[in-house]
Image 1 (cartoon, rainbow, N blue to C red):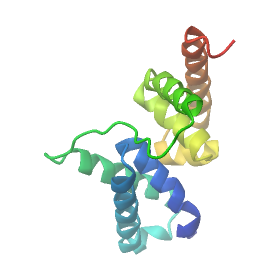
Image 2 (cartoon, rainbow, N blue to C red):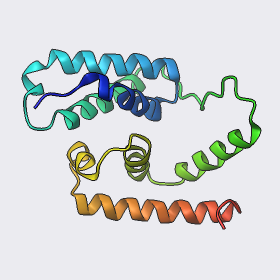
Image 3 (cartoon, one colour):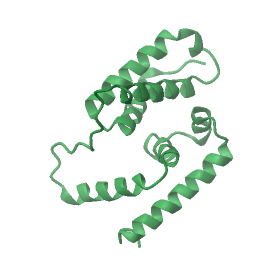
Length: 153
């Protein structure tokens, strides 16, 4: 089983951005992820290449954050003038930030990168049942937070 790098580059880039919160560094880390993946050609032909790719991306981001000069940056709003969109993004981001990090990651993989539950199970090593249960709990938590913000009636 091989993997189409072009089909997954954007997803890995978004995943790195989710972890690092910086557009340019996320791009570098995504490229580094694919270089490491390609160098490990012996694993590419095994059963779970997508899970392996996400594992490399996660570890690459962790390695970057361990560097002594790492500073966490807030989300970059470049040339956006739509204040309602900015406010909506802020409210949603704050709501997601209230979730535990494992639930944040599941929400990201499922709803931002649009991965199937089976793929998420392979990536995280968690059963499909557990993922469904955790996603349901995370979405209920988000609804509660957004109701408190009078966003979700």
